[in-house]
Amino acid sequence: MGHAAMRVDPAAIEETAKLLYIRALKVLPDDIKQGFQRLDAGETDATGKSILATMIRNIAVAEKTDNLLCQDTGIPIYNVRIGRGVELDGVALKQAIRRGCERATREYPLRSSVVHPITRVNEHSSCGVLVPVINIDFTDRAEELAIEMIPKGSGSENGSFLKMCIPADGIDGIKTFVIDRVMEAGGRVCPPTIVGVGVGGTSDLCAHLAKVAATRALGSACADSEGAKLERQLSAAVNSLGIGPQGLGGDSTAFAVHVEIAATHITMNPVAVNIQCHSARRATAIFTPDGVKIGF
Amino acid sequence: MTHHDLPTPITEAQARALVIGDTVTLDGALYGIRDATLIHMFDRGRKTKFDLAGHAVLHTAPNVRKVPVSNEYPVGYHPVCVGTTTSARMERFTRPLMAGNGVRLIIGKGGLMAETSRAFAELGGAYLAIIGGAAALETTWIEAIVDVDMDDLNPESLWQFQVKGFGPLLVAMDSHGGSLYTAVQKTAEDRRAAALAGMGVKPS
Picture 1 (tube, chains in turn red, blue):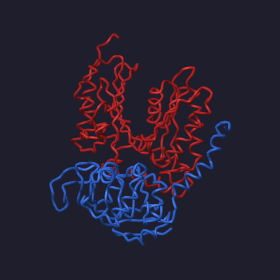
Picture 2 (tube, chains in turn red, green):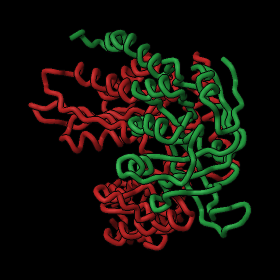
Picture 3 (cartoon, rainbow over the protein chains, first blue to last red):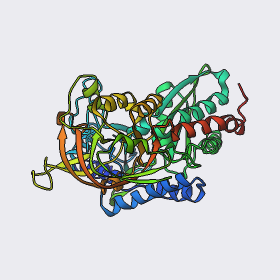
Picture 4 (tube, rainbow over the protein chains, first blue to last red):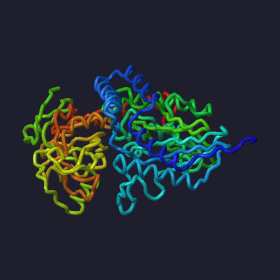
């Protein structure tokens, strides 16, 4: 590479993992705030309009009172992207993130929303078996380590669905599945939402892609042109159903439908839906040799 | 569309006077309850020390901070962030809460279903919709955590809040068979075919 590897101290990662969890719970990203303004401008239903106004007010109250936007601290997810020129101990990285997540919970304190799936015991640490979820990926940007934190709320996470459609179902089967699941979820997933759709892959990859889609910034588009076309069609269709904010009627059912795709098998046509609520929270830290920058 | 300022607890007549589209603001005691609380009460036979007759229950599990017991904090809990969870998971507990404990009002988000509508009609109750995800605002309506029961289930304890100006909440299901959720669902079903056709989906 021609230069010394960039190193990041695990203690700095731990502090950042803690800070990101608390910040994500308090401050909505700018793209989501702009999404609210766009929906509010286009909403024609009186109830829908008044609900959007309350949600927008809540964003301001959370910032003014330095409080959490939503009581649901979610399942903590950390997406880590490691540059080619970054040298680190992967085990230490994961341990540091876990410690930061636990410290945010105990020291703030946050409600731990995480329990053992069989005993239902809550350790009051937001941690448990394989939680926080830590996804690791890599980037070409040599001297950069990015950590994105997403507290994924359960009301919308319970709006998750997978169908192993068959090739004969075609794209029509995928479109129909998405519309029917949005109708089924109704107001339970805290609309207006971001509807994440995974198309293709294996069953687990398909479900993961739906989550990637649901947590992507508003204004971004699927890198695949067919996927981007599907996003536009589904966004219009979902918002024609009249479900509206909180499922109480209106035009603003979703900020957007996002699609992510993967190649799939000749015999397969999988589709997954994962929904993000209007409290579409995320926070990101980017480590470079110049220091750490916190954003969305 | 009438606005009702209701001190809690309320009577059956007050509950039956509520009609979908009305708004309600509550003052007084309000109880926080959710999945684990209800599972322990109705599937495992635990009894609460609270008299819930005529009261409103909120589907919640708050963020709290432990503080020394004082007049302001009678049980040593400061309400950090109190919001509302999705009600649908608690559908089967509405009737026993009403029939067994005398609860009149359910506050939640996303709505409840047909069995709850029947319980409201038979026993006199209503569902008040709050804006889910607007917890920072909701917290400003909470004066104190007055008492707590079944705290081994924390954060899913049975919480007694003191509230002031808690609302406006929208009456979304009433004792006359009315449900805004059913109406919206019907609209969506009516529009489904056009939504699919608009994307070029052939009718199956």
